[in-house]
Image 1 (cartoon, rainbow, N blue to C red):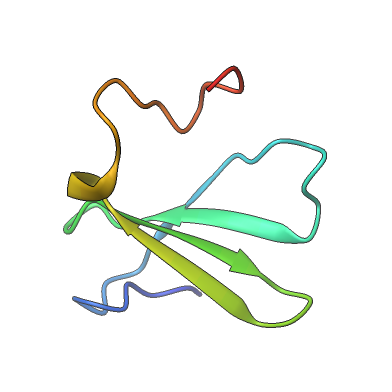
Image 2: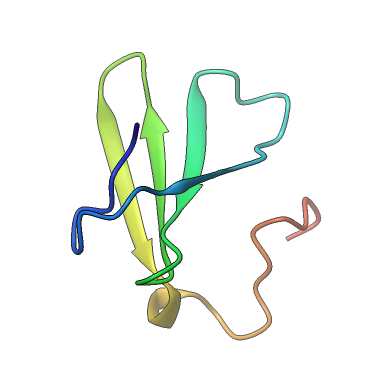
Length: 63
């Protein structure tokens, strides 16, 4: 189970594009933080909702 690095709550898995099989995307419902986990080398990228550009939709593949 992947947990939020800020509040330690369980994160919900989000669907990723099929051409990125080595990474998974998770979202914390409490903090609205997204975390991409690259399982091959253990890297975790965390993005807070306030860091995203206005109008950005992580589920929209055209962005």
